[in-house]
Length: 453
Image (tube, rainbow, N blue to C red; front, side):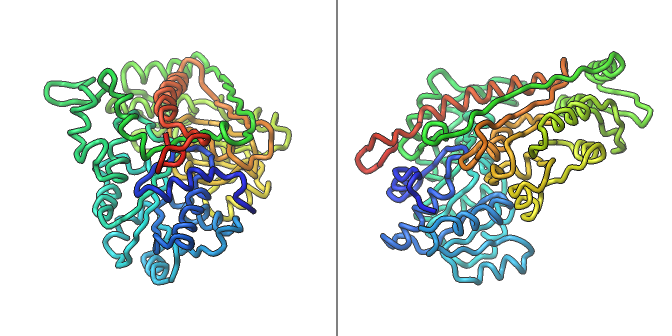
């Protein structure tokens, strides 16, 4: 396999800048970055040892697979630092060009690894958006010794522009958006929701978005697959289900009084966040009681799922679920296999799994599932735009052989499901503006910053 269709200008930009961010969904970020690493190691000899930090399954499966898949990367060697502490130590003792660790073990790596890395790749950078997290603090401590760093993400601002500070603090150590989060807030935001001295949320000041885009544009590039690749058509469909009068009564009772008496136990929503989760559960058909029992409310979504699977006419279907009881109820209704292990993903891509289950939080980033099917059904929606888009991108990506990818949403009419869809659309609009502001133009070159706007 060759690199003929790769965005080589972006690869050149990675090589020319000490810190760099690529925003792209299903665009070949991994192979582009590996190409730059290969050139830096074996052509210009600027890099000796690289650390890649990625979600577990991406670290374990995707990065090694990409190295094996491309002919021009055959000289690269890698060691995957996952598993038990003993397995991780053995992986670090191996001689390799690239060491790949899952992000959950980054703190362990920082505390126990004696190797030095002159280049770091953070794949998925948006998982470092919380500046109070242990992984952020570990990477921040490692950063001054790293000469070159690259961030990869398809969803830079899933929850708004406030997410950007931590991401760029790791990339440029505070040069563009400030060394401290307080500086960033004071310069670009104002309190939105607050009670006395306690501020619950912030909103951008007039003109702040454009100012932020300008500050980060010299080390940032975004690419949309549809602009550079022949992508299949993406069709989004909503299948509505309707609650009965009794089911609607239970939904409204919990929403109004925060307490619901059921034959299988009592359900109490302690606050707004808890209420949101409980309403999502009722909309999907089952709910956890206060003592963690499970009470079935309805089978509306299960019936709809069964209809959608049947209408697929034998084509493999990928079903996204959120709650554990979703998975259990689906598997009780039909033969469905959860994708968790490397074997599961391989079998799916080989077309051996008619109905597969996937949880967005554990398998939303970086997995190549496009060979297994082109139909995604959302049994339960997620509030997270990042997880939503990343899950869709498992099928709607380069290498998808079907001409159309269908994303179906099972939505309970008149419930919180409808609100979640609207929130996702709003967040997508905010993120799209940012991505467009730093969009790659491969026909343009700026001196010393090939192809970067």
